[in-house]
Image 1 (spheres, rainbow over the protein chains, first blue to last red):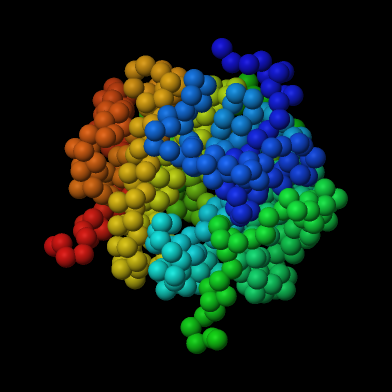
Image 2: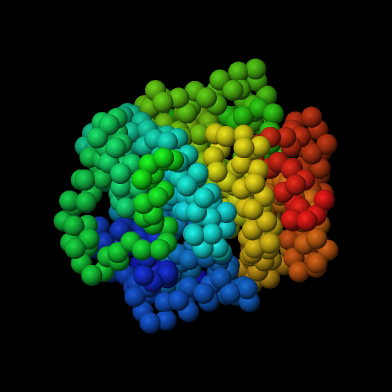
Length: 260
Length: 260
């Protein structure tokens, strides 16, 4: 049972994610775009919402080949269907030439990806929905302000410092990339996560940039942004604007008590 | 550079984690205990806190072989040093005979582990610290009550239903295990996570158990608990009692408005 690996290599990737927001799916798109890998973006189809919801349907117990999923993003590749963003990245990295297929590097890159996603994606989402994802932002605004203050002042600099430490370490190598002296998927993960966090907290991120303690982080962000395929992607209609979703901009979440 | 894999196989594993709480480190311990794998538990040493803090020290940029870490748990195996709980599990699984070394199963198991950890570990931590990990529980108690209510009523049943769906699916196979008809590391992850969540929310978990919709989940929990090595471990002094940490029990977080 199961299709041969050789057959699957020629199969197109399909990303299933919510339409209208960059969100977690965007991290996957950036990998495809940088490497010029063809992919089907189900978020652009008319049945995008239906496709996403079919996976979290309580009656969905998976199929012969795959267990059921909790939530999107979901990646389809031939008969294989997987979810969980860090897991999708782990699967794609060696296939797209963005990471090793075996050895210690697999685990080093995975830990870096998980940490960046914790800090600049998961914790950013918590800033505007600290009580319940099912409730409106407006109904948890006071709590969101408190959580955002802790994020801006404590958590964010801790994660920025972590990324800078990775860049300052010997395993980062030359060239300003995070690992092994060449571009890997974690550099792309960092790019998208910093981009989203800049959208959500522009004043705060500008302050940290100007502070000069995390120069390597912002230099890496700039370097990825200027890569030809990424640059073309960001200028294309394929790139969706930020809106509701993981990275949201609410000006009041950058203001301290007493500020306007 | 780098030691041969053959040499490392004979090297003892060392877990670096906070002393006095089960926490994230406990999930790793359960894997070692079930498989009878010798390991050094740095949490039991007098310099446990020092060891943990050395990794998150802002001056620590890693070494020749490893990038720096954001936080514990950290696993040392020969010259390899890795962190991030799902990453440590991914590394250990094939070495301890608790998962395949390659193929689709790697990604299916990783997605199941990540989802269980999201639901029964990360989100449980958020219930008592929805505003700031750096602040006392008492200073965010009101928000914790709100978050806990949403967790108990919406998130928890959604995750329990997910695990039940995995068990009901074809890929689970016979025998009541989550994947492929035999015990894998995700069954052990589920055991520890359900155990911790039962400690944190005993009334709520008992209600869901009695409700009968997630019988497979609780049956699997019981089955792991009765395995000889796990049973012996739980009765040993090596098993640390729940206390402050990820899984905490605050009775008021199970009470709705108007209840005593």
